[in-house]
Structures are given as structure tokens and as C-alpha cells.
Amino acid sequence: MNILWDFDGTLFDTYPAYTNILSLVLGEAVDKLEIYEKLKISYSHAINYYNISSNQEEEIKRLKKTLSPKDMKPFDGVEEILKFANKNVIMTHKHRDGVLAILKYYGWDKYFVDMVTIDDGFPRKPNSLAYIHLHTKHGIDLVIGDRELDLLPAKELGIATCMFQSQCDVADYHLQDYSEFFNTDIPLVK
Image (cartoon, rainbow, N blue to C red; front, side):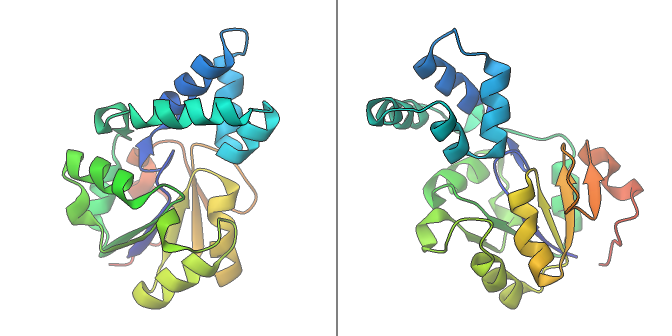
């Protein structure tokens, strides 16, 4: 099985760290749960929703640089799926250096044969060009993401989709926890 993974909120629980950063910039009057929910839609959605100024955005960027890989915890059970897959690839809007630093910190760089990051110049999700690129090279069987926009390009290409810790009509499969993966009706081709 060849799996295309989203990064933030799918492989690694990065949203709590990003929520804390936005909370620092926006102030305590803004509810952290609300910030988290807006970030889950997308980073740009949260920036627009809170009408974040260019100065605030610079502060967010500065604070993000202070995060270390240990602030980005992997989800429980995901490593077993990475080991099971024939190939794992990543499609993310993060910068390659940041992704590689986190993967290397946890010793997970060995699990991935390829990735597309914001540095590669592909349009942002839900545009399907990056997915076409990875699917052509690696024959993707399943796409796992935590937001609908992670799954829409896969649906366009006829690739099976799995939504992690959320619900949407686009997903063929849903997982609340990765321990459920091997007990679902996902066809586990090897």
C-alpha cells in the first residue's frame, strides 16, 4: 500500500503549538478552542478570520521559529501504519527544512520516499497538481488527511481517502485514532 500523508494534524499534532502562538499574538480574550477550530480549517482562514495585521503576522512567524521538533508530537499509532506501508509520501504546505527537522528528530525520515512542500512551487491544496505528481511517481493507494482540503485532490484523481479525527462527506474512511486503522474496512493491499 502506498500512502500520501498530510503533515500538520495528520502525522503530527502541531495544532496545539500553533494555537498557543496565535493566542499569544491575539491575547487572552480570544478563546483558544476557537483559534484551534479556525486553524483546523486552514492557517489562511484563521489569519483572515482574526483580521491579523502584517505586524501580527510577522510576530507569528517569529514565534513559529522558536518552536522545536519536540513541540510537534507524533500521533499515537501512526508509526505502525508507516511501517506497514510499502511507500509513504508527504504533501504539505510546510517548508521542507521544518518537515525534515521534525522527521529526523523522531527518526521517521526513513519512512518517507518523497515529499512535496511549499518550497516545490506547486499550488496550494485543494489544487491537485502536487497529488498528480506524487501519484504518477508512486501509484498512491490512499490519502490520509485531517481536513477536507487534504482529500479533495485525491477524490478528483479517484484515489481512496481517509479522514483523521474529523468528519466530511469526501472521505471514504474515517479514523478517530490510528489504532483503528487495521480494524477498518480499508483494503490493506501490500
